[in-house]
Image (cartoon, rainbow, N blue to C red; front, top):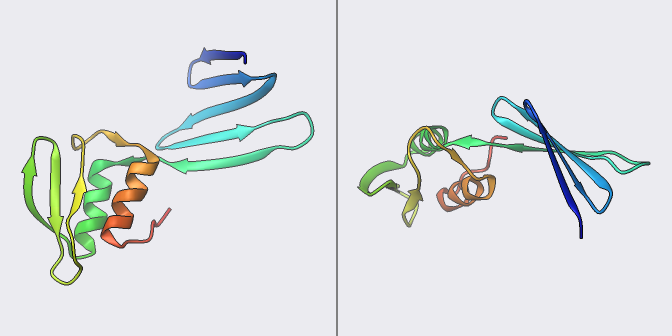
Length: 111
């Protein structure tokens, strides 16, 4: 298995088994273009900042309960459970982490 990574300014080209994957960073979105010789598929993944997730959770009625280290814990007056948001305020969250937090809070992702 061969992997070639080329970095030029804001574009990263990754080649795996002679099939190029082009990753372009655009503001708060990563666009992944899978470009085999015939077809081209585009997948866009939203990159969430921690403070954006906190705003969404608080807008849904969740309120801050406690913080341990960098993890903030939220409760809801009606919904059961605790929603935990990790990381420092201005850092990006991994897409699956953000999806999991929104799922815990019972919120459908707006993006």
